[in-house]
Length: 183
Image (cartoon, rainbow, N blue to C red; front, side, top):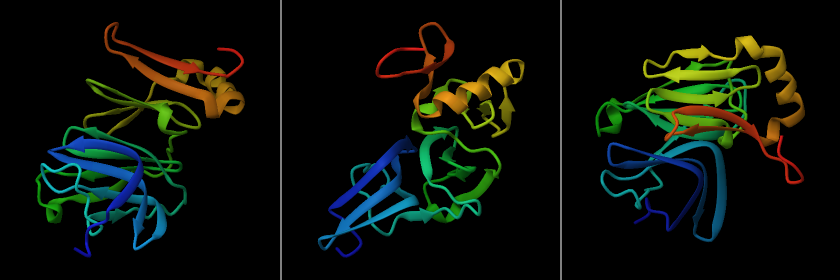
């Protein structure tokens, strides 16, 4: 009973192998709230609605920052932080077999709307470029031809930039949304 929270809130979630993985969590237990911007928590197998308080993984990013998104990729969970990209390998249902590494310590993600999952991998917007993370977890920069334009856009529109994958047309779009106008 003590290991269960009646109230686990989270900003980001994804499913993998019958478990829900949540990140950047807020736990309410015994009337007190605690926030953990660098925690991943996971549900019991085949019970995504049950997230025991003991099922957590704390990420230690030496550069600091918080989790800004998570996504599944093959048998991995990609954890996007402001200053690094982590890989949680989940080959089996037993958490003892899982491994966590900071796969790309010098590449961060702008925010949760700067992530787009596609059939071949995950695209995301970093401070310096548009990056494609393939199924082998290799980070491929795809914006070299527009590097200056992209970096100027990040300076001006970082908080409103979005990336979207249109499944129907198989097209990746980088957008920004402003409340007064669309760019």
